Length: 125
Image (cartoon, rainbow, N blue to C red; front, side):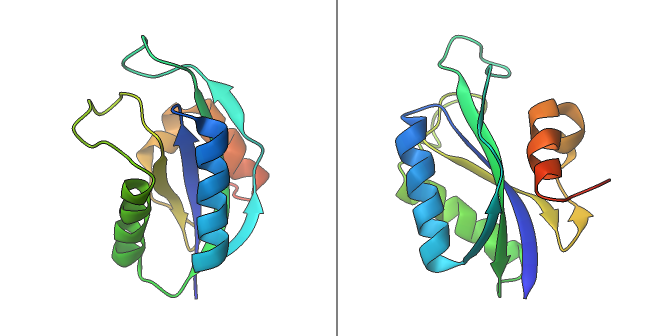
């Protein structure tokens, strides 16, 4: 079994979409502890709604590459429009931050809210 801490973010109907992602992860994986969710200002493209961000622990039988592909497919199921700019609005953004205790997402170092959320789940760098 592999353990991941994933970041969760949305700025299109975030309350509804975050509820949906947590339901999906609970039904399809082993959802563990979930951090608090916080409102954050957009990065890059500032003229859009604030994001709601948090993190969750997920256990999976998938390897890292398969789990990353799974998360992208879940984003697509929730209506993620990949034609929009990289830092544009999104229904859901899911990324692996920690994989089996190892930090794998460089954004961790530049985003205080991500460090806080991941830290709530027990990760210490």
